[in-house]
Image (cartoon, rainbow, N blue to C red; front, side, top):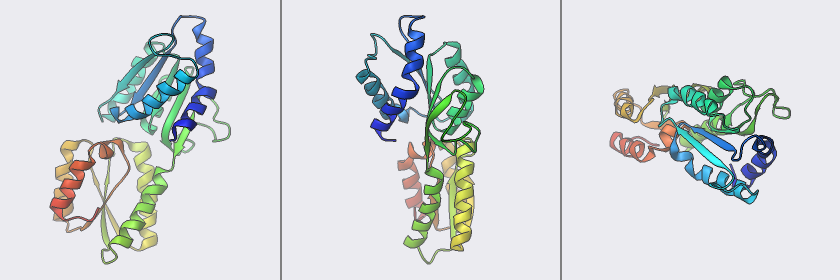
Length: 244
């Protein structure tokens, strides 16, 4: 998401609740929830954008950060922790974190970032009229994954069997990608075999299975777990002689 769009979004969706609650206590609090601290560059843009609107950290605004270190199952507990702190707005990165926040509160405003199909997963009623306490941006990642399979096929035209690495812990967004990618595989007339990994410790076993099955090309679905450990995945791919 571009920084200017995010600033505009927060200016319209989050600052008003902050201003309203600021009358009740001196310093409004923004809760930030993400499965990975890789969201820190985006958070930097958030802080800078709110600073342009007059909210200066340490003076008239405070941030509470909660990262689950790649463990998506912890997001529910971390969302509950932020709600108990009575933050004024929740900024949630990726679909799973946004769902955890919505399940935890129906009153605190939630600004979702990088979610996949927010209507389909039940975060909002519609793109035009989100309803409830959730607003934000959606991601085209699911469609991008399908496009990546097509590009991989172009790069390796003689390969008809492909491996897909996915993270079942990030079930909502990953399920969307799996569906789109399977549809693309059928259109391309290729076989797609899925392999799962929920932590970096499971990468080696997944690659061993891919190599054992004799598959020569790998599609890594979009996920914070994989993007934060792409160097490891690249090294394993080279070792297994996989097209990536």
